[in-house]
Image (tube, helix red, strand yellow):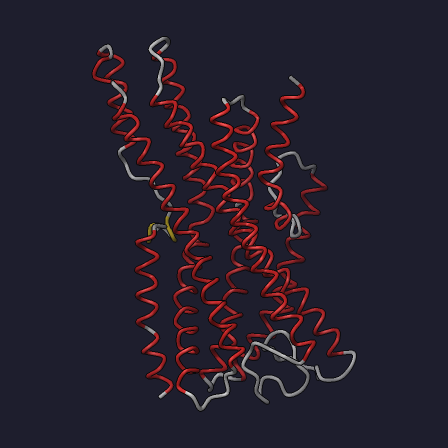
Amino acid sequence: METSKYLEYQDFEWAVKLNRYCLEIAGLWPKSDLTAWNKVMCNLRTLLVFFSILFGLLIPMTHSLIKISGDIILIIDNLQFTLPIISTMLKIAIFWWKKEAVISIMDMIANDWRTPKTPWEKMKMITRAQTARTITKFAYCLVGGNSFALILMPVCNLSVRYITNITDPGRLLPLQTHYIYDTTKSPHYELTFISQSICLFLCMIHYIGIDSFFSFLVLHICGQLDILRNRILHLEIINYAYNLKMCVTDHTRLLRSIVLVEHIFNIMMLALFLYFGILFSFYGFLILNLSEGGNDLSIFRAAYLICIIINFVCHSCVYCAVGEILLSQCKHIHYAVYSNKWYNLEPRNSRNMILLMVRTNEPVYLTAGRLFPLTMSTFCNLLKTSASYISVLLTTKQ
């Protein structure tokens, strides 16, 4: 018995390990057994990371944005980093604000892993967890690639940014910023470079970490819906009323967890949709501007922009794909109830099954700000709308 509990605990730790690495840095990892002192320390770490990004990146970049407000190319070069930084700070603030709701979901997930399961159910949970881990690993690769391009290349006097005498009068820094002191002199330059690098890494790791955690939560719920669908399809006649009651209870629990995920992440998803549309238009404008000739954009920077837009589109597509999977799994529950031979049951049992059929017929999906459903159709519409604004930017430049 003790061995079984240990293995179940190991499975849970394996499932959440990669997500915990990111969120523990800022004290955002949800734990229900923290002491009062540990909670205070976690909150202090969150504030430290938040204000480090604010004062180390956002304020200097906003100062630079005001300084170059007359040049659309420089504005776009600034906003392609400023907007994700603002989005990351918003994510950290919302995640910290709604941490109690996140803790309740994590307690549910931990209990799901500790509950006795059949080999098929365990395999289904591991499969969903492996998919979430793959998404997280891919996100880690993005962090590594972006860190190399933005932090290490300026050391070699190379940059993927649009370099001018206005934004970079002296030695290169990772980001387009403006300070009240001279950053070209030592040790001001070295200290500024190190502080930017640290703050940039913190920003990227939490941008990726919170998004990967969202995918992990939704995919776990999808795995539980798979298990519930299998149980409904194979309801035993013996103790039928009890077995049906357990299925209804489990379905209600999963619906509540979906509502909690929606409550936590819907504003984050709305911010994602807004700045994704803006950045997609900006990147498209820069690439088209490069192809016209007679400009200062290097081929190397064009390759970087193309890689970034591909990664950005794939990263944003994951949210809608995960939402689409959740919507599909909820529909499968309805089909499972319908496929059950409820018409051969006793009148009382068949009536209960029909009520469950009506309940599961309601569509369940996640939204962006309670405005747009997270589906692949919404993602395609967003791409079309964003692409249409590229022509507006080209007209503005002319």
